Image (cartoon, rainbow over the protein chains, first blue to last red):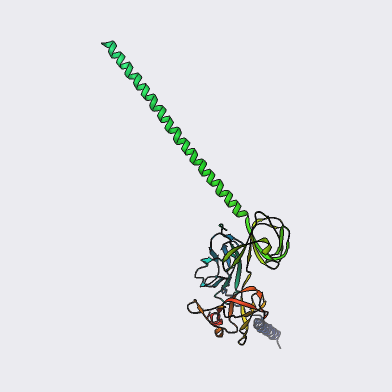
Length: 145
Length: 233
């Protein structure tokens, strides 16, 4: 065999081996990447959905002040509560039930001579919210006594 | 002729000055009178302001406490208020007045009419121990509360109620008990009867703070909110 023929065969085999090795390496690299992709969690676009929070408007009585010594047989009860809440105002001489159409309410309320225990209860329309209550001690002691 | 004219002129000038003087004096008098009236008016307004401020301060100092009598001593009464605190009611033999309240009417009574366990309302000036009493009213003590009906006894006409503070109260529905039911559509209160009350309904009630012979409270009045009101929400 001639020397040139031997060299050509040698280089042919050598480059063939190198080419096939590179080809195999590339294929295995691709397969590994695909497997890794499958194993890793898929990235998803994060969507932010606004959550509706339910905050309760606290029942407050602005007037009268507790333990008031009133000189008239009627007072004005002014307060604030959850909109659409059912308000019950009860004393030994009067019962009042109404729906709180706005947040603020204002009602005339009669007094009996002496001590008047007035219970104000607000039932929010949303029943998941807690019932609230306030107790007023108002004293009707007219001047002329 | 000239001299005569001069004399007339001088007389006229003097008369004019004389009249002018009167006019000035009168005008000064009017001014001083109106100034005096003005200052008198100001003094009057000031007096009124002081008087109303004094009344306001008196009213501010006038306070009221209430509680059950636990002891009656010479010159003072010991009471326990709604927060279970002891307060001393100091009495003035000459100034303190006593009244009894019944059915929204007052009747004058004496110190000797007061007794242990009476519920009294006292108005006067607050001090560090309690109050210096101007007026003492023997009043009726009520409980005003609400809760859920847990049990109904149809034979003896009583209700077992659990209040918002988890207290269990038994209420006797008497013949005199005023019974109201909330109309859930119109939100008006309507007269009702015992048979319409259901377990689970919400009840607002007023009772006298004294148990009856059945060891229950006699309801003065009740307001029922049917459970359906809350279900329709």
